[in-house]
Length: 459
Figure 1: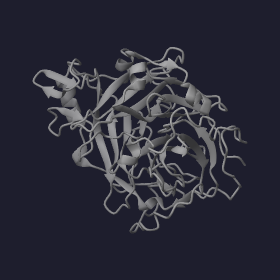
Figure 2: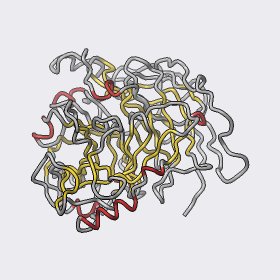
Figure 3: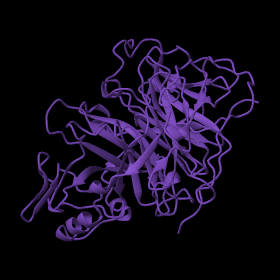
Figure 4: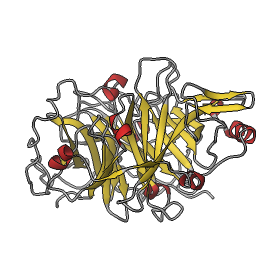
């Protein structure tokens, strides 16, 4: 069923990264793990750390998304890429024209028939429900003492991975989403679920690409999860490979969004990849971590029991201004996916929102393109995650106070408000009913997945 694009009264936000090296490398200048625990953690008017001033600098300067079926096209004429890339001033978010950016679905990357062919050869497709029946790892309730000290002024919740996943030095957590993104009810199969993406951090080629962890958080005292490999079917549907960039190297998977049966994954310099959670593949063998794909009657996924196939891909459209896709989040109430750019020392990274049909799970096209609903300069360095909720932009930035991260709340026309955030913070996810905002931190051994109560902007 086709529905119209909702109207927005606030500006779009997303997070942007500037380079793969900035995305994957820890902050080389960060102090040692036993230093600076009191940095930037004192109380403030908002219950967090020392904050930027937040004068009421005027009403939200959001852009009206308009109705796609009424009148002339919303985005007409050539994009002004110079105007779409103004210099950023720290803590001062400003709107830019969303029509400067557009995506297009790549027909050469569609893999619907290929997934059916692979599933037929591999004994049929599996579902998320099937995976939930076979969760094989146990998480640990609570977070590390270091990050607990950082977050001591907040009523945090969270968990740690098992000892092996917490310490592994060649898989790094990145994106986060969950059942509150996937369904209006906030539950999938009646369960409260989280999902975290990891990339294979290695100089070896080929890599093992990227994986996701499906976490059952229904009982925070008894957390169970399982890893699934992301795979790319061949064009002929005869095999599949690990998720890598076109030029080689593991897909960074810096942000993920779960919408219905679709999993959107940030594709750094290209756009967004879409994975199919309704047709999960189950290889015949899980005893060889070096093998992937089909060979005769045998199928493998680098030792994983399940593989999630790529269904489609969105690329920057011809004529679009350049923008990177470092992370991704969902504003379900506004039916918009938020993406953004990581930039190490430059607050000019931009964020953008893209209309998504929550029933079909596909981005909304206008004349064969998906123009951004709106966009803004995030006005923070090292943005690792971002989303909008109830008219507020939330931005997750790493290494903002020594090694510690910060969570920023802002919108165009307002000065950002700062909240303490953990070391190695990454992508963002909102549980709407619980009113919690989550992140997953990447660096061993402080790999905490944690959430704190949502706060809006002060009046």
